[in-house]
Length: 166
Image (cartoon, rainbow, N blue to C red; front, side):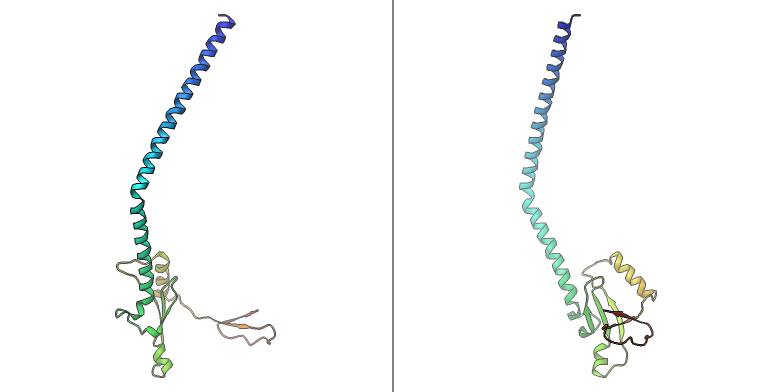
């Protein structure tokens, strides 16, 4: 074989590779265009449905939040509405059961109750379950924190209290 024949074979081989590459690229472009057209058609057909679902979910979430905050006013709420304090997270309410009576001078005992309000068949989140377990196991405590000015003299240490200088 001469060098001229080798060059012709090499040129033919490179031309074949170039034609195959161009054909492959053309096929990829055609398939990409078809997929893009199918996606655009699907998106146009389902956009209204997706938006409606999004609005419904948002509406449902808002209704749930409103229901939580309005719960003390509902007949199912077993505590005096004035005794409930909405905190929202990680539980919905801290209820100081008997607070109103104690404030008015009629009551002598107050119970502290953490309340989570669920609409329908809602389940407690993992955090809410852990808080419930802590309360049930008695892992609840009281801490008084006295905040003093730097100009004030240091007070005597109080039982169960901590002083923080500002």
